[in-house]
Amino acid sequence: MSDMSMLQMVLKKFLNLAGVMAAFILESDGTLIEHATRGIDDIDAIGFPLAEAITASTAIATEMGDTALSMAFCEFGESFVLAIPLTGEKPLSEVTYLAIIAERDANIGRIRYELKKNKDLIISVL
Image (tube, rainbow, N blue to C red; front, side, top):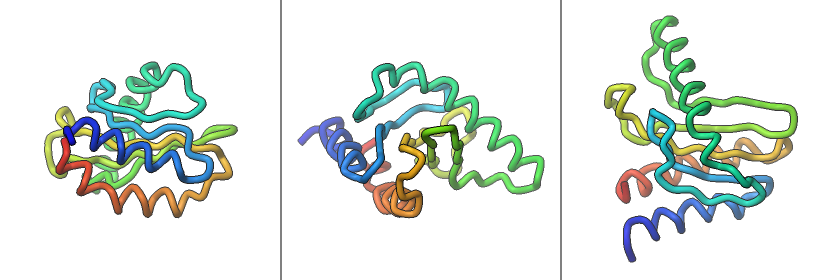
């Protein structure tokens, strides 16, 4: 099994969680590496704004004296996004992220658990 098909398989597992609409891997510049979606037509358009939001979150953490971003969370009217860094202590310009878009009433705790559980596997495939 190729690395990309393994990555696709792992991302599709997130879609089995109630309320999850998309799971994707993106670079710090917003470039999508891989994605799995259900009900989202233009996932490519989300990459850059999400990368900007993560960069802003990291800048806030730095100003507060805490440079380690472990998770970014953005909540909207009917949905939310959770994103975690995948590449450890690399410079901000080289970090890759795993992000999930879910409906507002999805189980955030379960999604966080699955993000952390699958993080090392995804890193090994990247």
